[in-house]
Image 1 (cartoon, rainbow, N blue to C red):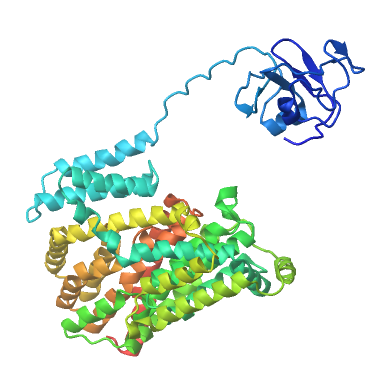
Image 2 (cartoon, rainbow, N blue to C red):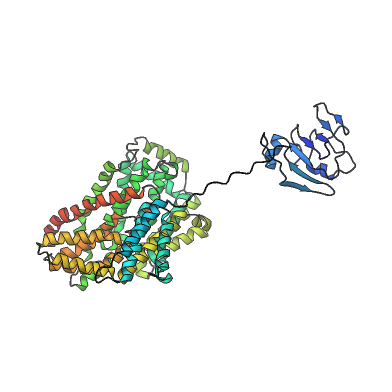
Length: 587
């Protein structure tokens, strides 16, 4: 405490004596006083001051004092008023006195009522997920499917239902799924958590942390304002600028998770925040919902256009080569050029009409953005460091394969620079809930999907489709359409494009060729559609988790528009693409 407390302080001793003061007065001065008068006191015990309060020159030894003063009580943390309760929490020790600050006498406090029990989960949705899993579990397994594979399918489907209905946060749902798989001995601990050593989940988590530095440093705002100043008259113009910028970079960065999550997701989020669109404030529909969904969907398109735009594309090329079909980088790119440009051009327009932003025309935004840029002034040190860290990371994403540096290592290099230079802190990384939540549920789904393949369910499914389609005796165009549809929509069972290609590409390519489909057309089309089918879910491709995890688009809307656009993609790729492929000689 300090001297100079405001007038009007009233101290009441246990013995019933009351004190008032004229500044300066300190509790310390009272505690130290023994027989000598306290400085600032001007009368003797039982005298009355001019203010009408009793005064005392000698405080009692061992006094317990009640303090009644609004300003003083605020400093002491005492709540005064009609319901003030006795307080003995603030104690001051000195020899020989012990002084305790407490409120004036008041009625004893009433114990708060015990709050009613509340479930931590939406029990209706949780029971639904468990019920679906139980029904599949107890159905007889088809001929050729082992009991273990069938039971894992039950757990996997139940987990997917839980992720769709979200009775708990997604990470918690995934952990329940893994727990159920281990409890029923369908998976061991090592099998259940095997995907936590996979690159993609960690790359996505690191992308969240890099995005934190991008925004915290101010570099995100600066770039966002620059984009708004150039294209910001309409929200559609802003969106197209990001869509085509991402497409231009796609052939140089062979990881859609790195490209979308590490570069364009931070930029899109900064742009949304700069425009006042924030899900935490309930303004996600102002711009962010439309922008995030569009950027995600078009990332699937750009990944399909080039062999080097997605990490799993070379796997499809290698599998095609093992079947005697050699696809060059140029052939793939030429085949994807026309359908890709059509989709990149039309998807923003489709979503603009089906899922429009609240802020469509912003004629004043460019001028306002230029003013904000002027206020920011020159680049700060943290902005320069962040720009350098991102430049190093992107360079390693582009050229790292030549020196044996993978995408996760490159991202860790960038993160290390930001941590060491204090642009971001590890506490901030630990506090980034969406990053850890996404890492958890995505890794869990990858593990379960991988063991569905290892236990034989995916090969059984693939072989069954091949037999059915082959027995139909259709023209190759119709047969190929069925093959493509089954291949495409079976991606609901996969949390990785690479896993899907590895499990089903060879078998479906073989049946397509057996039905009379031109080999090069079948190989290229299935390879490119292996990227587009990522549009269906929140877990089907590496760019989905960061955009979905930002919280701008509800899961129901995400799945609905994913299905709608899947029909559009198939129509364009097989319709417009088919004509284009005929023109360039693929068939």
